[in-house]
Length: 484
Ligand code: ADP
Image (tube, rainbow, N blue to C red; front, side, top):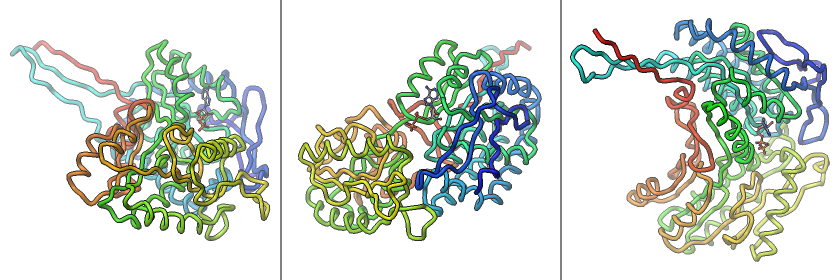
């Protein structure tokens, strides 16, 4: 894709417009360091303009029938599916993930449009038996109003639709600010929304190099009634604090520190295969990525052997090359963080099973490539045991009993995803109930779908996205008490 294919503009009130400052910023390919395009550099005033457009559009959009809103979303779904290859190629170029994974993500992104095209029609209210014979209670569900959304770079299409689709289905209008590393994918998604005929002002896009001023306007502007954010726990806390001033509703999808527990009654080879697939998905840059792999001591040897053999065969490089399953990290800061966690672990006695270095040969030095890495003998004192890694490093920790591993797994402020491998049904149920995480994979590494609620406990977030729950986040509950 050439930069001329990009629209380096904001999308406000149904129009592609320049940022108020006229400024743009460059967008780079993290695999090669090459510039691939430009995006409009929106500011707080652009955000305010977009919020105003959203407010203007709200009444009419909320006033459509659910069936009408559903049709727009269904049209967008079909257009996204038809554009899958184009979007996937752009994603690999802008974000770095292998093309096959990009295709999968575009499909996942489209799934939210389809799912919420359907759920729009199922926003049921209810009647409640009232205490007096001359009284009737009726509960309405109504859209919360104007929504402000902030999305991350690791899933640059699906994180956009996961917010836009339920918001629009519920009857809300929205202003979205995508991550500065991946604005081009967001622009393509909004082109699709535009082509699907979604009315002016209903969905607005403000790209920006510096997110903070836009975030400030999102929390301070009283027209915004709901803020939805996916990103780091650190930024989520700042936004939550800001939103509290006006008691805005918020949904937060934040960091994770997923335990991956392999019990002695599971097949270590099967578990190692699962662990290798999910740990290195998106180069480990996934909030549900296993961050602590707990393996029962009695099956440590066969697990590590299989895991090492799979990981050392993984090819790292450009996502456009056949056979590559590990793309670049997003930027230099991500590379530094991974390097720091690995050297801290090695200094404190962890053993390097494979990897453990930046990759620079064959032009990989132009991007941010790190060898898929396995560390064993990891202990709770090490940084990697506490900090989210967001990179291709798998730390392995031995355990001896179910109680011990449950305590270790729950010993984190995060609470997004957890995985367990066991063939003991009672143990599976005990762990499912006792793990303090919002998403638990039981002999399953992919417990995600547009149809299922995704979200975390503790400092991993508030609220759920996807599933029936996802639309609830955009609905108010209103009680009517009627005397008859
Ligand atoms: P990561 O560390 O994964 O990049 P961030 O939380 O920094 O996660 O980024 C996620 C999203 O939050 C991006 O869209 C980014 O631009 C945005 N963001 C970062 N800092 C702020 C801020 N102070 N206010 C509003 N949005 C922010």
